[in-house]
Image (tube, rainbow, N blue to C red; front, side, top):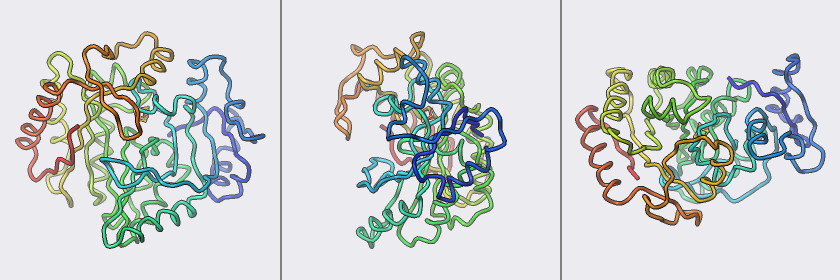
Length: 340
Ligand code: SF4
């Protein structure tokens, strides 16, 4: 569970149940500083004279805010729309995709007016009926480390459990999921765990739980009857990557119960980076060893107009063939949602 060094409350945020509960949860902890936000600039309340210091302090900051009405962003290929419950993450993965557009906002921000957000989601659901509408809860965050005291995921899962055509999914590297185990989900929420080889976790996924802990949490989620999936991302094609990823697939297989209520799903995403992310990463982690040599990659435009540096086509094809073959031979009745 994430214990912030400081909590910044935006105007009126404490008047909402979630804001009040966060205050109650931390009010007797001497190590937590409470800040009432003045004006509309969060940045001025977080110390740090350069990006590196600001990032470090931001990663220890929780912002409690009220979300203004916005158009929901699309979320290909994982869902129809992003659900804007939270943004930011307490993890410090060096390759993190948030480095592209959230590097100025490294803090985790929770939006307390979730009833408004669910109401807006409902408009999208109604508009697409009779099609199902899928919402992604972790497009710009990892929501799990703050769940024990925000109960935001719990509320979302309960909301979607009653929805005829709305579905919810989120992905995490964290394991604070115990409050989600005994609640009504009706199979309408899919929980995915983001995994990688031991080498990648140790080298790049700083301040995140171990592979064993994530597998243990994924088992609990399956045992609670949820649809559960694995996100293997980002896949790095280093020397002997096949051996390590095969080992990972076997560990995943060993950890899941024999009978599952739903087929295990797989989403696999190769490593890619943007020029913006590369420059941010180089500033925050100057000693990083991430493979980011532009000459070795091909350039493609992503859905939000960013240029992405991807592995070359023959490398991606080799990766696809590898995962399709191995997943099909190791797991029965699996569903590979996409490999990109
Ligand atoms: Fe980024 Fe996910 Fe790592 Fe958080 S856990 S830092 S969102 S990659």
